Image (cartoon, rainbow, N blue to C red; front, side, top):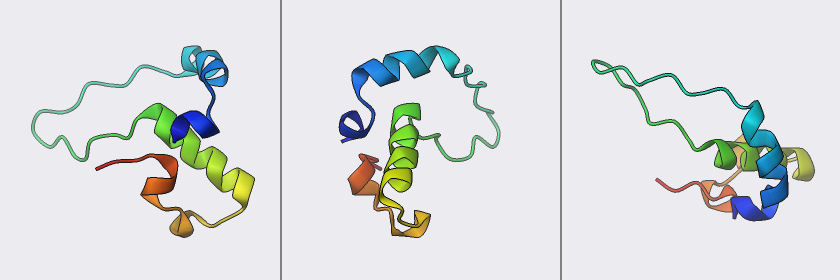
Length: 65
């Protein structure tokens, strides 16, 4: 589903602008980060539909687990 909201050509233009992720801590690693493309798809979905963040379902933007 993220491919529908963030096409490959747009993603290829955005990837060079993203900073590298810092390494995870060993002792308190916290939650695994979401994939960048899925996060961007969520942002695009909210901006295009005008829904609130609470109304966005994880399945709609392609976030699994």
